[in-house]
Length: 330
Image (cartoon, rainbow, N blue to C red; front, side, top):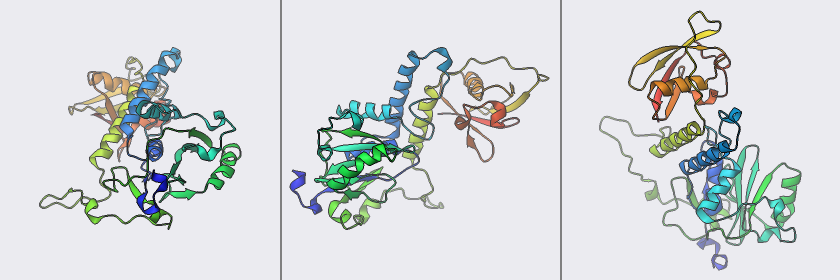
């Protein structure tokens, strides 16, 4: 049993915050392995949105996704579905669990406050605060967990979900202490308030450099980060039904404005819209102009900004008159 081992033989996985992917980090910290990624969770969100649209009336068809936003914030429904699909685990609200059960006998908790998800889990017979905003996991005594959990939920505004049993085994030494999303720390080091030193060979990723080129630096997005961003954009776009394209207004129509649309094939189209049109109308027009069989991403302004952030606004509210819009395939 892991609990009978010494602290030097127990390893704890921890993901630090990236973008707004706290839901992904909370799940991986809970199962103590980099099992979930943003693309997988985005697919679940897309499926849930499709199911929810079936029971919505037509007025809700164009509403933004309720399960993921363009920045990567996932709903509790996504987190629950992910755990159920992968491990067959339930994630009930703490208030629904039998009050006679000693809270310190539960295996893990997923907490939410102020749009942030994080995890507390038992590893090596100790509870650990695995909040992705922390530099290192922090040990929590059984006494503190028992005395503070009720206050967190009733007085401090936390929403708390719990896993009674069935979490994957944790604590074994990994083949590598560094993963794509997080790192493993030796419990012995964590109890001394320090990170586990890294094997210098693990940091050699082989990215290299080309002749007459500068080496990559920390500001360069990895291919995986780009793939995750594309997966999120694709999910959000596919969970929103395109509105029908409205006729182009005449040039002298009140509130008429123009956008220049640069299509993926390099063609430029000047198209008129009304100031009262939804920004989603721009997506609908661009979707039609590109054939409608591929997902698209729209950028505008200089420097380029993501138009997905404006989808709930009108053209006038978004101040898009005269803008140039770049249309790209996802």
